[in-house]
Length: 134
Length: 134
Length: 134
Length: 134
Image (cartoon, rainbow over all chains, first blue to last red; front, side, top):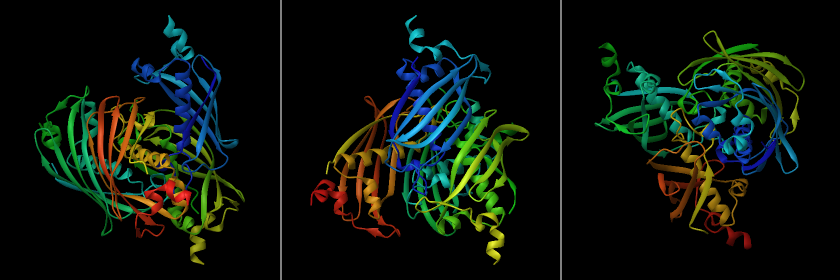
């Protein structure tokens, strides 16, 4: 499993608010994309995880907004896995425009089944390439 | 079944774009709320329809934008059922701010089951109060 | 200035994700609505604040998600002002469905002018009714 | 000015609804991205157009939904300029997943100034490369 990944994206018009800034809620969607792409880069598919009846849910987001981003900006969304316990995944994020820090965040994830019951973090989320090889 | 309904709502900040206008995609969400509330006013619950394995899907939206709406505006979203055939529901919408026409639209809906197969419009969508009485 | 307010809203279909849950980013929009309505209840208009060239920006959101909310749920979004300094507004939020805690958050706000320069929290945000009386 | 362009994008989790499908309003955002990228491919920058005080607004969207798209699908959003008059731009769109038609639409655009007054379609929107060369 890769421990970090940076995903580049371009800010869309509908993601910006009347101030002309990316709406602060949108960064949570950007971070979700980055962790999905980290998982894809490691050989996994989050769509396949859900098809298997497991769902990654967000327990906590702590996001600090440093400078505004604007329409058409290219942003780099970096995610790093800080820690994986039996029941939690802790990640750190940075959102950058070039060298400029736009926002940073810590996110805690967990896994539930389709009826919402907490699950241990399954092997497929720890090492998707290893699981798919066996 | 009621044939028309008007739902009032207030424009949210995150629904507006850098022009300061409600983003044009947002009106489709407003219209979805109005038809849900029309159905509720008629004694139905769209959440219960989905729980029963039926899903209302949009086949067509034809929306004409007349004047912009802005953050904090109170808008009236009016829906009227124009026609129900065996397989289609045709509705007309008007979005007003006071007496001012903001947008108008025609929307065609159909019903599918959980695997996406087209279904006849069920009685529960034609007369929810009648169905729940029996 | 009122120190707290609870705003009730109903979860919209487009706010929910394939899990059937309210997407975790959406709660930030709900909290923005609640603080706007707290300000309106206190006699202020956030649209008027922006028209005067002042913009309330989010510095930090720390949100803990407790239980999922679903389509058509009625949620109560409670906001309380914890502290106002010269340059910061600190607020605490609870999102409830009846007695059930869905999420809770702390949010830090600041004020900037149209070119993004930090401003002291103006009187109009501290006591809108007092300002409009004079 | 290029007359057509295809933009590939991947469906994001937050763009999908409880049916597991891309929400029907989202296609309007996808089409907005495609026309922005058509304009960029032609040497223009829509951000620069707005910075110059001109705003492209949507007059009409007529969208027919053929088949659902799902989370993580790769979609090709194709835009073609059908007609440009003094005051209108008419475009046709197709949204495809591989060879499968997901949706198609006709969109009519116009241009306004910052106070909302209709403007003639400016040269910068007709031939951005030509304008920037002079």
